[in-house]
Amino acid sequence: MEIAAASTVSVAPQLPRLTNAFSRKLGSISSLSFGSLKRNYCVGKVSASSSVDVITADKISPASFLDKRETGGVLHFVKYHGLGNDFILVDNRDSSEPKITQEQAAKLCDRNFGVGADGVIFAMPGVNGTDYTMRIFNSDGSEPEMCGNGVRCFARFIAELERTCKGKTVVLTALWVVQVKVDMGIPILKAQDVPTKLPGNKGEAVIQAELVVDGVSWNVTCVSMGNPHCITFGTKGGPLPEIGPKFEHHEMFPARTNTEFVEVLSRSHLKMRVWERGAGATLACGTGACALVVAAVLEGRANRKCTVDLPGGP
Image (cartoon, rainbow, N blue to C red):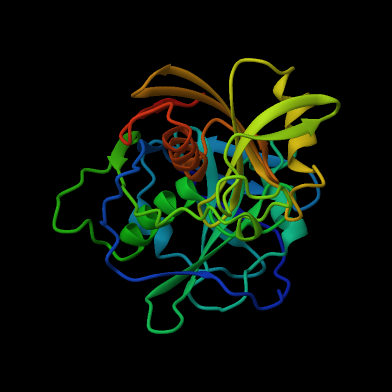
């Protein structure tokens, strides 16, 4: 879903940080690919302190919105989701610093008093010869290293900012779907690079290792897709809001961790629930879907090409 909106959130400087960099070659296809993006158009105003007023508008032109620029402390943004994993997108190409602080991002992501989202993504100037960089703040204000669904939403946002769809004609309506595939890169398995303090039990990798969480023993595999993931297979465990934070903040994960709880339906069909670091229970996680397929292959549970069912869809 996409929301074109005006916000009264003020702008504050941010500390510089290494960002994810992108070239205009946005159409590369990964062997681990996932889902579609959806949006519709709305307009509204958001108060930095509390209230939000979003009004449905069926005939808002994306071009007219994207031509706008911030004036008088107003922040323009759009909203996308990939399988329900939703993000606020901000055109930040005129500055190397995010237009809002991490604290303000957390307020915008609040689903009761803000816009509501799993994170805020900034499209920023390129570095080191690339065309763009991307930064993202989670809904709790923290800054992750990578986000798979976020990258897909970012790619679609950039394509629209440039008024190009790679030579294809796209009809913009009040609600539409578009496929975006991204190359997620090579998974990282070395324990200290994930990072995890669990000792490697298959060379330097952590595969089906024991992890005791709140007195309960779990078998876990640790994978990084640019951000840390802990994957466990089976159906045990309590409610996700109870068990998820215990994994996320476990002492064995010095940078905290995303956690995937996976049920194997067949060697080509997996089902997962996810607790995302910094965002909690979300409807989808792109890096998590990729990480769990890697873990399933390493544990001999699945083929290299799989369908992964997430709460937001396959």
